[in-house]
Image (cartoon, rainbow, N blue to C red; front, side):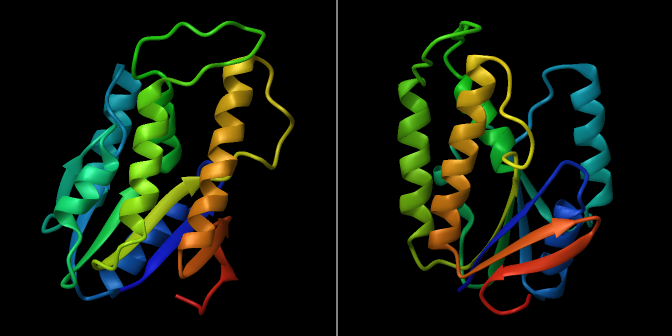
Length: 185
């Protein structure tokens, strides 16, 4: 059983790298997609991602209850690829329809805290291989707007917690993996 966190910026090659690892595992692959089609452009992205994956891979679309999906699909004979955790955080941030102020303190929805804790607890278990894809959003300027800053803060906190739990952590830039923790994949 191994847990691998794969970090990188937008269009860095992190998803393609995770998919190569899943394919090379020789195990049944389950792809948990956290994105949902809120508009035509996102629907097109999802369709393109779906078409790029091997047809025999099982795809599970779960925008919120990620721990439950992992609990259902993790098994020693499988590799589960979760793409992507920052989309999942965004989904949770807006899960209760809150309209956030431009300035001031942000109170995150209760489900945000519950789902995050459930994910970390589920990943502490020893059921099968998991590949977790997440954006590294902390390499740029501090975002303008309270909700953007809260998102960047929470993404950074989640990535740190996952890196501590995972056996391996890899940073991908320009399609090239840089091993941060553990043995090379």
